Image (cartoon, rainbow, N blue to C red; front, side, top):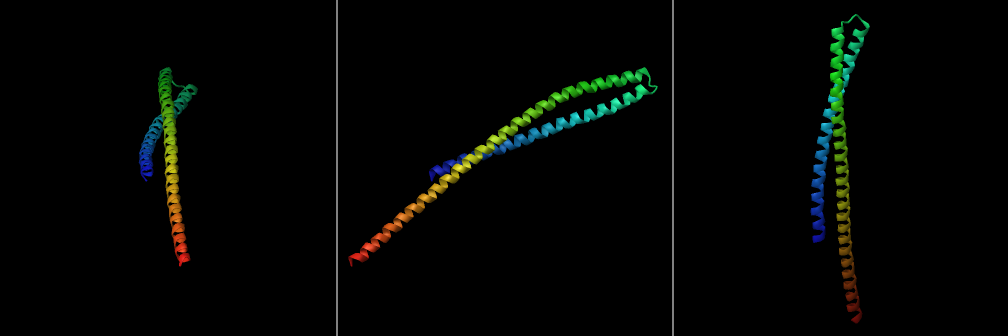
Length: 148
């Protein structure tokens, strides 16, 4: 019994670790989504400004307007490059947290299986002892009745 109790304590500890891994994974997913959304918005803005720039190139836009748009596009490109690095880092972090969560889940399943096996073995042992005791009692009764 003490052995099963010890494994149940280990199981509850592993479940806490799994819960923490789930929370960390959720936070990393949220972080990734935030950074990825920022990147998406910058890419959309770049497309819009690029379309305006192309329109001014084809029309009679002033050199100042073209230079301003070109400088703005370059600024957006540098921001995109910076945010892309953050997205890659957030993705790597998210994948690491997912691996940790998977490992924690596997550990919980292992301990659950051990506890289940121990409980089944204990139950079978008790049933075997009861069966032996009943057989012995039956044998005594039979022998007692035989002696008469």
